[in-house]
Length: 438
Figure (spheres, rainbow, N blue to C red):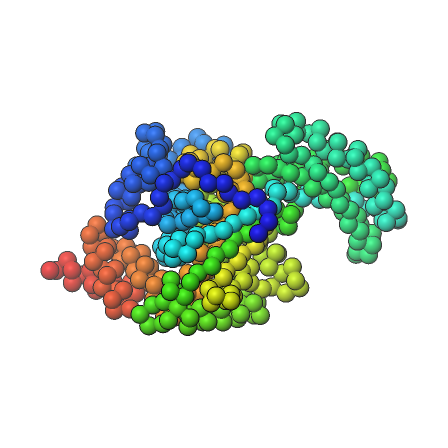
């Protein structure tokens, strides 16, 4: 597939967590602790709420008044490039973690996920205005390419020492805008294991005076682009018909239905928006768990989905000559494992420890595998009984809690709601009253 791949190394021996859903949260956590080999201090972080101290939170953002918790789960069964992973996910919506784990179990039996990525290249944009000769300014900038790159790299000797740094420049000319001619220079920067925003922004600001001197124009904006189109990640799966067969549908029929569901998303932006949201249902929870910028990932992904002139599916699904269902995903993925919340939030650091990854590129590839798994789950459900059956069965626990159920009552009420396909608070309250009478 091109680009760099994850290299199998020591870590989780087996991500197939048998009977995991039937355990208590405490028992699940202990199983993960043992599987990953966490220390006592690390294990203690999830044994009680409040892992993020208020003092730490106060240093992360402004006007802090407290902390806000979301559920943290783990997706099991993932095999990516021959290596097993237990993947932490932070999300409030039911069915996402279960669906990803179930699809990973199916894909696991068909060889797992194959992923790759390009180098971690980010763009910084330097906007130049007040020019009467924009094309001449472009050539002046390109003629001093080496000097500009050297000035940018003078900002970050640590990054240079790690093998990163500014690699090249691009110059884009917009001869006619409402404000007159505009030239935009891009710094192309290898940010290594960082997300890279601070690095490239600093470089853009550093070279601004030099660019003004060269062009005679005025530099305005100096800022990264979240369309990280040079920092791509890819994932691929090939699933046999036998692995997709159900008691009601043959594997061949299932594949035909799923391919037709994809074709709908490929041609209709109204469908594509929901289709792609499902992909991000898999990606965003891992981004949040590791303290990365999910808003940047979302922005880049949705712009990438329009790159051919209209909004379309981020994934492709097709049937190969052997009759296998082949799914692929490619999108920008600007993530980091150094700096920012990845190093200040205790649970973000814990999530990275659970993953046992060695680079930001590896994290990006796991994001792509999750996105593809989640998309597969949604299409499989839509192609058969519809999305609500499984989703509402899991949502029933939330409804039971809203109705006032506690302890064992939650599962008892949720089970009755799901069995009757009537997942409403009013019905949950009636069931709870009956249960307490008995």
